[in-house]
Amino acid sequence: MLIFWVETLVAGVDDDFLAIREAFRVGDAVRVAKYADRMKHHVLSPYAEYFQLRLSLEDSNVSAIRAFLVRHEGSLVADKLRGDWLRLLGKRQHWAVFAEEYPKLVNQDDTLRCYALQHRLLNQDEAAVEAVRALWLTGRNMPDSCIAAFDKLIKSGKISTEDIWSRIRSALEAGNTGVAKYTSKYLPRNLALDSQKVNAAVKDPRYFFDKQAGYGSRAEREVTLFALLRLLRSETNQAFARWHKVRERFPAVDQSYFMGNLAYWAAIRQDERALNWFSEAMRGQHVYPLSDVKLAWQARVALRAGNWPLLLDSIDQMPDEMCQEDVWRYWRARALSATGKHAQANALLAPLSHEHGFYGQMAKEELGVMFSVPATAYQPRPDEVSAMEKVPGIRRALALYQLNQRIEANREWIWTIQDFTDEQLLAAARVAQRHGIYDRAINTAIKTVSRHDFSLRYLAPYRDQMRAVLQQHQLDEAFVYGLIRQESRFIADIKSGAGAIGLMQLMPATAKWVAGKLGVKHFKVNTVADINTNLQLGAYYLKHVLTQFDDQPLLAAAAYNAGPGRAKRWRDSTPLEGAIYAETIPFNETRDYVKVVLSNSMYYASHFEQPHRPTLKQRLGIVAPKN
Image (cartoon, rainbow, N blue to C red; front, side, top):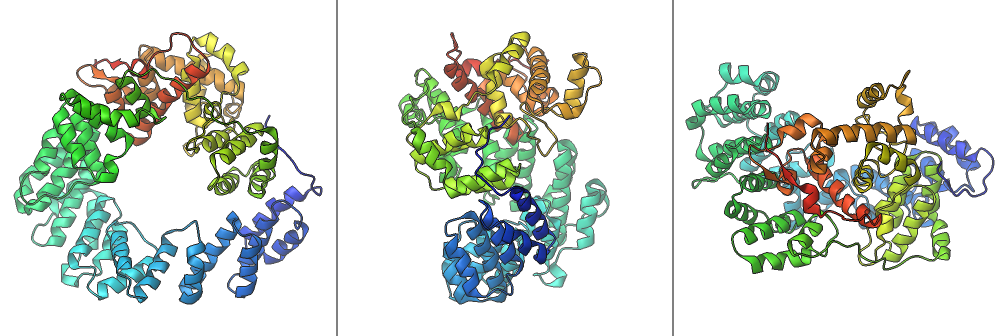
């Protein structure tokens, strides 16, 4: 059971918060005022004030709004109200007050950014022009405040006809057909997309291509390319066969564009032809540049093929910021080492080895440095933890956790700690640990820059319940803890958007299957959140998956996250280094998941002082070929 700090409150006042929030949701100002009066001395009273003021925002005077902002300066609710007010000011184009308040806002969104850009455009700000153009070229659906900024640049000619086509193409590639059709309205009617043809390409891309494809105008070619991309999302060979028949009808730059997409989808499907198709996409004078995502997959294809020179060349094509990501620093170093440039490789590995994630650990091993957990640099005193517990934002977060309002509580917590020092972060993490809010303890401790406490980053609750289960199924404690930390952050009653439940995030169907295997009669899914039940079922399933994959943690982790069938399909036709298998997993979530789980396992093995601890490379192993 979670233990919460509770201040002395008027009986039933916590229920008042739930009631006022519901009254606010339905717009009942009378009930909001009633409960706000009752909550004047409650720790969550700023929310009550916010609800009351927000409902009357359009009629409130500036002095009332500013009085609230001053009274609750630095709080999440103040920032929230300021954002609401700025939306109203932008809509009414009250630019003087908007310009005064906008720089004070922390949590921004596209609506407010574009109102700010509208104001800057009025002042002939050239940097604002480039910012608006950058938003335009994303191809994303944008709020009305951005549309107004777009319209201004189109009328002034600062968004060109070619820019309009670029947005259409980006939107179509992302499947945002509504954005593409709306954007097409900026073109002369005789040049615009045919909306009915776009709809037909969405409904049945094969039929559209075979019966309705056109090549005479740019609009026709764009929709035909879109139909091919729709087909390519589901099937490589059919899309390629149709492309082969018509490629000469497209200009060279469009050929490059399609081949880049063909190579990308082939890479996702681990099709060996991807390597040649990437090469073809980048050949010639009229090349369509690869996106960052496609550049990453070009590198992964080279890595999986063991083509180290091509991997180096692929990383060199990446933007500077992307090159500095730990993943590409590590693989550049490996590629340099494989091509005999050991000094250059070590120069990259040395600073990377001081980082605490997966690639930092891998870099250590490349340099021959033994893994070790950094010593705890600072531990807050009990009085510092008690003082942290009384910080207003922490108190509000704890009250919200007590009311089981986890989403709002997380927002309040994250807001409160955003500018904390390392010492304050560790004190806050201890508060979270004390109250059984393990996810906040871990996520708060992770944020420290120079003073760390890895016992907080890698909490190990429920060891008594875990011990018997681990012994029964002969599971590695460090691996299981590494997996649970990533699955649920030790939140016992958590339920994912997909429906996975509890510490080990079991899907109901999986839990029911395991219960049947264990001979559990009259099994009910609502018992899966129970800690002991969840551990029993999850441990059995994890052992089942490990047995399927010859006790290889890497493949078991991949199977646990994405399913055994996929983990098997992602193997190669020849033995593959585990790190390369992990790096070339097609699913972003699973690719990150397996790395974090195995990295976690290293820290837990050290924390538990396990003898004969394997290295990270040994945990990754060599993945056997298919069949």
